[in-house]
Figure 1 (tube, one colour):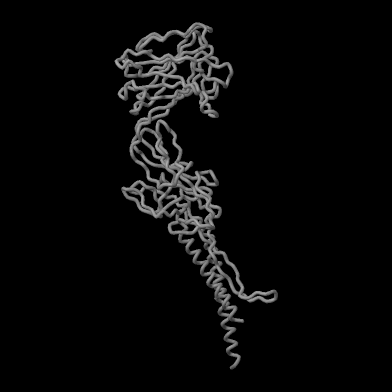
Figure 2 (tube, rainbow, N blue to C red):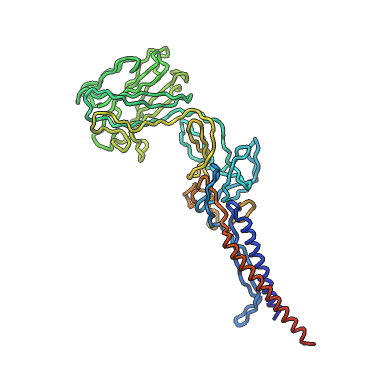
Length: 489
């Protein structure tokens, strides 16, 4: 019947019009950052169906959300621009900011649009007005110099632009090769270890190495002087184990202005076991008014490391013990497998005693830093949002957590290249980059729309021709009905 043909053709017109609507939306957003295109899924239906009978019903067009196809990644000059490579979505919220903080609607959305910038209140917001949420990272302290990201709820990213306070040194590493063929009684200049005191001032500890007087003899004593300390250091007993005596000298607030400590070392016979095993420490006896050294040391009983206690000038004068700055000094390469075990002997970059007649210093490092003024903000490939300072430090303030889904096509589309979670999407959770199925991030980059103009124009031509064909069927059906009307004439 002609009317059935008309109904089928009309459904074709409607479906082709829907397809052209999707194409129009895609083309208009071809340059929209992070946009995900919508394709058409055509599906037939029948009005009547039986084993030997069929009555055509036409076609329907449903949206096919192409949310899991990544757009091209392009470079961007902004230090706060970011693009996701692989799976994952950035959690965002709608809201507003003021001097008092962030006011949101508590509805988490997900986006791939990463053109973030700081607003007037230092919150990161993208070009569609969506505010970024991430895991905050506490500021470092002496007790926790490398804090981990918070494990609680995600928070809006607000960049702290205040001055970075000084962080006193709590750990130093020194590694060198002390020559096994050194002439007895040789003295070597071991360089300096520069630490940061509680006021952010740099303090240089000088190191001097003394060799045994004979193969089985004593370590020499160190006389009292302005260059070695406030009291004489006695020689070691004859035939004792230590092979090397280290004198560490630091500027202090004592009567002479300088104090020193000594640490006697021996090297284990088995390579890979002991690196400069401490066998004794001598602390200075001061003559200043405080009647207490500003620089002293102990041996950490748990791992054999040297623990220096230091009270810098103009910071605090001992006693009490709480005035001291505690610094763990590691001589050698830290044991990465067992952090509580002292350094291993003759490890790459560590303390060693090989042949030669001169000292060779390979590593001198110390944590801590002076105060710094805020310079700027940026992101890195690990998803860290960091700030930089005039003292050369880089401080991580947030870590990006990417949301992953079993079926990202099930996300519900919102304004501004954002999506809402839905049971059909199968939310998995928030993970750091490259973990738990999450992809990576590209700093200074943006993800383009995944729309291809050439493909969309081709689909538009096909849809237009299909639309014209369906219109022609309606015209033909109309002519057939007209012929029926003309029969009775």
